[in-house]
Length: 202
Image (cartoon, rainbow, N blue to C red):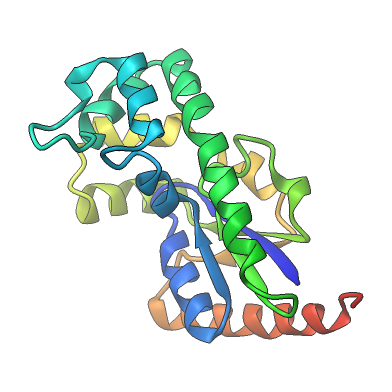
């Protein structure tokens, strides 16, 4: 099994890369998707979040109001850290279960937004960073996610810097150009991952 940690700053295009790798045959384990699952109604994760942040982070239907929670934690590093202490162990356990089910010959891509922030690089065979200039990230967040400039800047500021993220990269996908160029780079990346997987000890 070849274990890849895939990361990138918010708005860099990591999800575009992860979708393309999954289409090529990678087993994708998406930390964001799992993070949503572990705070669904009825879970111990949601109970812990409400205990920490209050019932004001719930919608009327009992689901977590992620926008409201985001407003709280992205303005306060201490509260963001507390949220991470609740969520990350739950996500880690679920990711381990999914990886165990993938099979010995799989190329497993862990889509981990906060890989650099949480110093997780050593846990993977390779780290792939999806990179884009900060102005491109900002523009994408405003245009595609309907964030205000202030919201987008706060989300970006809550993450490590671009240089810090690139410092942990074994490979970099440059997503500053077109989707056609991204397709080409991901094709090359997949070829290299398959080559490395073949060289892994049995």
